[in-house]
Length: 514
Image (cartoon, rainbow, N blue to C red; front, side, top):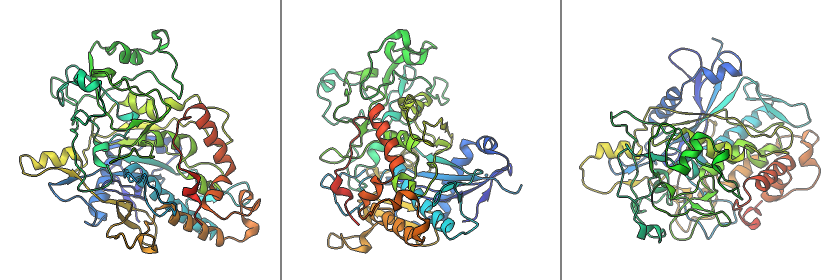
């Protein structure tokens, strides 16, 4: 897809991956100069605007929210390069890898990105000049062109730790304070869950009840938007005791209930994501002490708790292991990292984003060469997504009927064949129960379809040009190929041991398909 020049002419943006009304993703533009220049010649609003325009003008109506009744989220990956002048509850599981168990926007965007990367590796292997990859220093390996970077966009803060945001005393309260009776029985559903993404994606089911209210926009007494920038004590798998002697002023605020400016922290935005077994767990106390921060969480689902980790946790993982995953690491000299994360207009805390995506893992060490904790740039746009819950609520006004999340997920990748993929409940939209298990019932970004693309790439390359990791042993199943990516697995092992020890992993039989 041809890129669109932005106002100051500095760079060009081309959506390259996935869009999702419950999720969305793609890629953007191009700038002149070195990588440092690339990282400073775009603004958060330009990234957001390009994503919104692509969603509105390039995607069909299929899968988009029903006007004045449904709302959705959007996430995208944006490619920036120089110019010549840029959750479903599937607890029963399926071992064939043909279902999307996690349809949150951020996850759909990342998978669509992987689909794009696979296409680009096909171009590189065929020695096409327009690939984003160049030959690496070792046989069979490729590296990203040095003049490229990728920006991740989401219209809302990721679910989980990044959405636990302090609320100041002068802000409008979204609902009644948490009662002590409810605090002693937190399993009861109430209207105090303030995190929109968790309402959104119970199971990508348009009939899923939306029982929780969202805190729309923090406001100062004067009416201007107020962005939180204070945080909380970080916690790993075994959180240390809190001692005010080693806390920053911002971190001390979460313990004392006061910000450095003297404003009272009276509450926090709730997240529906639940702490994983083995973590300390939330206190459930009323007000600002309700949540503990820095913990691993799973996404909520209807019925049994899901196995899907929160988007905050997954973004933190990608910030160390890269977005390419284990399979593609076989062909790459280094991981593919995001250079920046941009969030649309919504409840937001810079401190919470930094904590959730970077600081929880900042002390992870002993990683294989090429892997490391990235200081990803995090920014917020002032532009609101027109099909976000807040925007739809505003337009709906006093119209009758309940507002519900959209039941479909749209994926779009910058690939030549069938770039669009619309799913509902983890399968292509329109799939019947009888059709499940057939080829037509597979999303193009399901694990089994991405694995098929990987195998096609491998078969297009003569065996004497394969990377060493694929020549050492005979591999057959998806799981075997993942495990054979030794440097990736070493990095993942180090991350689990040092920071994410309670991470929930799928049973091995989920990945035994061929």
